[in-house]
Length: 357
Picture 1 (spheres, rainbow, N blue to C red):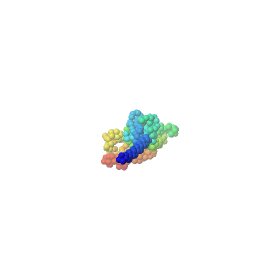
Picture 2: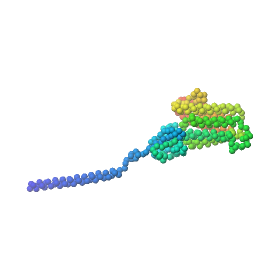
Picture 3: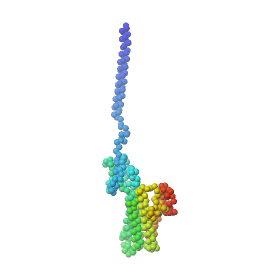
Picture 4: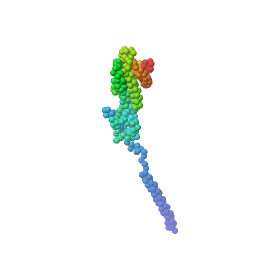
């Protein structure tokens, strides 16, 4: 009896151990199935977005001078989605003297200027892009001043297509006609030389729009002025040689003063000393700095008023009147900038004409 009881007590233990083994097997199967599902699903996971950004190729833009082929700077880290205007803005940060609106970039030296909307990736043959730089600001003024110089000379030689051939051979030319041609050419030759060798342009502008406006204004008025002064029926000034000689002397003095003022301003810009207002030097033509803040505009207006008195013609008078208005507006604008930078030194000065402006 005792043996039977022992065997009956051990049988439930075997059943429990067998049942526990089955449970552990089922749990292992489930865990293995779950693990296999994770492994299979991990193969379909997409890479994180950070890896995409790391694969972006940046471009380097090498900018060379179109004349000397010398390297000006290298603009690096340009994304493929950037436009040429973005490159111009980064170029302006590296070279602050050249505003984006006056920067002309070419893929070839004799090629066309690239538009600002051009995608930089469309120009890339490799990771380094070479572009040629042209200063459109200087080109703008050269075009504006070369036209009046050539137009006036065409009227001065009295082409048969402009004037009557019979009248041009009969009528005698007054000396003021030759003197006016000399003064007019001197004025624009000075502008051209200063544009090439003196001026350091700083303002931004839209070159094409300003070039059209400037050419229409200067070229149109030059044609009108030259037609009247070089006409065979032109009448000399009322007070004769005295009026012509005094006005010519005043014209030459204003031209000299304008040149020396521009040289003084350019010397200040090149030296980098912009902490103080330009002061007069030993040169008497720069003493006008004591009275006005923009003496270059004062001399420019003086030149055209003198030219009006010397020639005594209505077109020159209208042109001089418009120049007074334009120069006064520019002088007022520049005078306000001077007041912000050099208030103690400029507060008692006029903008262009003492007391009046």
